[in-house]
View (cartoon, rainbow, N blue to C red):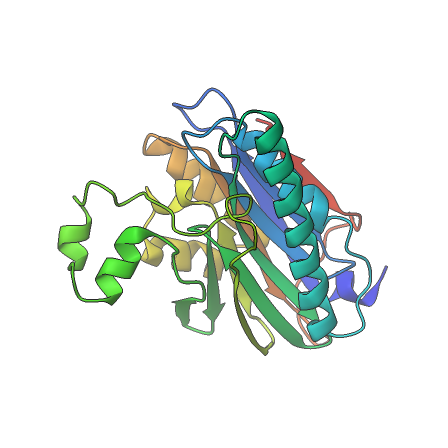
Length: 262
């Protein structure tokens, strides 16, 4: 078993939800390379499942990096490749929009990086606190940041679901990146907006904090389903457990990628 697999415990769950006919979400769990990701095909656009699968398939080709900086470079390169492929497909289909949001957690040698484009989110549970690492790339989030809207007003804003960044939409990708140092017990939650539409940050925090990763993803998706699941929902949870931890690791060590299923 590789060192990367030994020090991370991961869980992932996806569901089509109760309204949509097709699951346009995709996820990747690739601990050997230090890559975990969620992609969400843009709702309302043709071939959303194709878009998210294209993003995940590109990231799945990443192999063992030499540093977290190298890993970020590789991830950016693969997202650029996916972007070019989606633009080509869109052009062949007559210029339609085929895009996907993406949120990726990368880890190597005690360091981590988070990359995202769109409104799929990344949270960090550290000790008794949780923070949202990512910043939503949406029109309403920008208006709140500028002080044009309050949080309360944003709830009923007619364009609250308009995404300002995504893979496959522009000639060049626009990805936000943040990096840091891992601490023992750090737990990262990556999710599509199908989760956050129904489950509060406090609920995400409590479930991610007190459950093993796979149990946490199962519980979060189950809670979303109980509340109507108006969209596809996908959750990936990663816990950092270096030597000296008490986490029991699963037997599966190979990469897991899933899209358009369940």
